[in-house]
Image 1 (tube, rainbow, N blue to C red):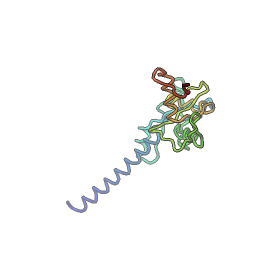
Image 2: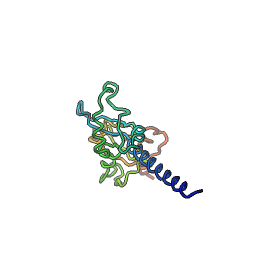
Image 3: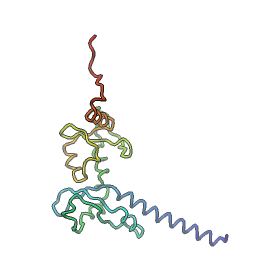
Image 4: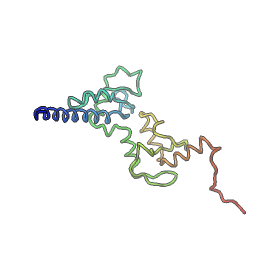
Length: 183
């Protein structure tokens, strides 16, 4: 094979890797839920960015953002989506996972006292204890209610959340051995 063909193939492979890498980064960045302040009513709204569109448009440089979902839809579905400027300016400040990670910093589990270190969102996700004294997984909290929930919640580690959920949902499977037996 002539050297010119090898060089052209190498350049094509490098170019494809750069393009695919740019698309993958955009898709990963925008596939998560976000919280924005709705310009219409100045309240928090949970939004989802069209990650596929962002990845496809990232080929040309910066990703073009458009909403794929909003907690104010369907009644406000025809809005001009001005909230996207908040995500474009500072995606980390609007990303639900980043907001939660920052909230857990320096806190300890309300039950066992174990301090939160780096939160492992892919494995042992922490939860929150609401005013009703029931621990809740973040997947059950709508993005639009993240700040409202954080204002009244206490942090719970994965282990305590799992144990409390088991006791609450299946008390027949739990043996309480915390009390002393008298001889």
